[in-house]
Image (tube, rainbow, N blue to C red):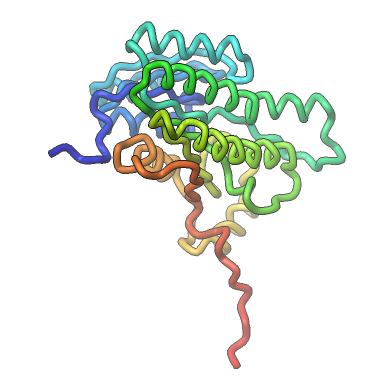
Length: 259
């Protein structure tokens, strides 16, 4: 009997797969047996090599998920090359560290293009294909704990991530009759290229003190959760946001004195 966590025979689409969490998800899917298509702003040849090293079929396109034409092209390419897809992961994002009062209209709309509009385009493309196919499927959205707790200085990013979770819940209800589950993963502090400049030595020290597990997480630890949500093991899970943060947002310890 095969493992419920196996993805053998599945075909997955992962956006933002050229590095970081997206690349880790693409590789983890390949290890679990899935074919993997992807699209990123940067060349994805490294991801292609890593996926093929596990014997999985893959292709990686260069494109902007904030462009509806590009997202539609990715879905069509997956249909033409793989014959369709079973799993769609919206992961592509960008980070802007800037106080809201200093955020221009262009900053706001530019950030939401990738962090919200691209998720809408991806969810819609996936939902249209999966419902037409009539065999169920999986949609996974990568959000952030910043959409759950208040984090100053990244208001546009936080707004996008919070909106994606609201979309996830609504779509989970809408698509459940078609056997399609829609869930989200909310990473906490994770070492990725996206955070290279934001994670100064001082910030790292604060995270290591505040995270109960005592360390910043890895992209692979987020990818393992994505495999679960893409697999049959999660068949009765939908409309949920799984937090992957080492316990950061539940840590209310302030060092009370002993009575």
